[in-house]
Length: 240
Ligand SMILES: *Cc1c(COP(=O)(O)O)cnc(C)c1O
Picture (tube, rainbow, N blue to C red):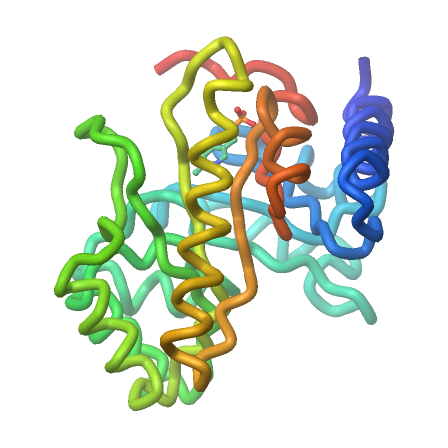
């Protein structure tokens, strides 16, 4: 199967999930998660219509970016590629991250938000970002825990962070084979977004980035606006 074939299949599944959920296809954006894969594969996915990409390491992406910048039209055409940071980001890498990424989806502490604000101000840009939420107890998961003082502090602080454009929420549920058992996590993120929208009407936190290769149809049924697909597009990642 080629990257083009895989994208076509994923597109079909996204469209089918939207139909089941009674949602317009345009409600859901596709992100190809290209971490660990060579820049040529990003160019190939771009040629097949993908415009959003997810990378999880500052260092790795900084290297690929050089090759990508040389690829015709990727960042300069009418509809350029946007690269999201979807991995945990240390505060001390905020400056570099703001230079190379278009969007940071993994703001998981107030401290990181403040650092990104400062870095974006210095770079003279307004940085689109999402708040990562942790709904499962595993230590490997990052993010704000709902209804904590730190999350409330961030939400109260956001209107004053003028160089951050907060778009919504991102979440990684536990990995389980039976995707019906993941559905409640997706639903919980939807409810959290809606309750925060009622409490903070000045914020427009609409994005729900949730759903990966094995569970994205369920995530779409539960309201995902962005699905992050790696394996189903590029195949298995090299093991570490
Ligand atoms: C790697 C990764 C993905 C993609 O996972 P697949 O199962 O390969 O689709 C999505 N989101 C995050 C945060 C990731 O780190």
